[in-house]
Amino acid sequence: MAVGANAQSATEAELLQLSRDKWQWMADQDADRLAELFHDDAMFVHMGGSWGKEREVDIIRSGGIHYKQADIHEASVKVIDDTAVLLNRITLLAVVGGNEVTNPFEVTEVYKKIAGKWKLAALSFTRLMSR
Image (cartoon, rainbow, N blue to C red):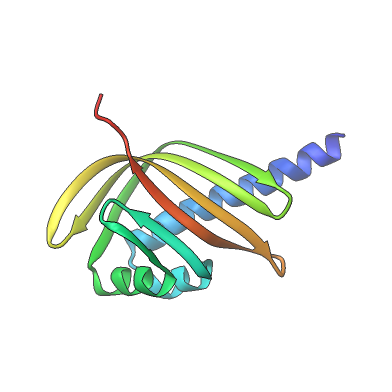
């Protein structure tokens, strides 16, 4: 049992690091790395709507949304076979339409392991109520 628990912990650690890397790539506007991470059929849900991979990458590349900094307060991951659901409670500093905004979010990330690599299949922002 310990081997399975260790394997699960290693997988969880890998996914949590991948998520942190993704936030950094978003801050760096590294659209090429993000395009590699995002599954071709990925879906993205924002406060302003939902769309697919191509539009998300284009928005990041053009600076339409600049995810300047994600302060991660809590992160957890649940792995189910070759699918992982990762939750992040963050405060996001972003530039949207030229305006700098800060919002508290619970972000849901869904990853699917394909040919030995984790691909982001869904990213959804839920704005939290102010406390």
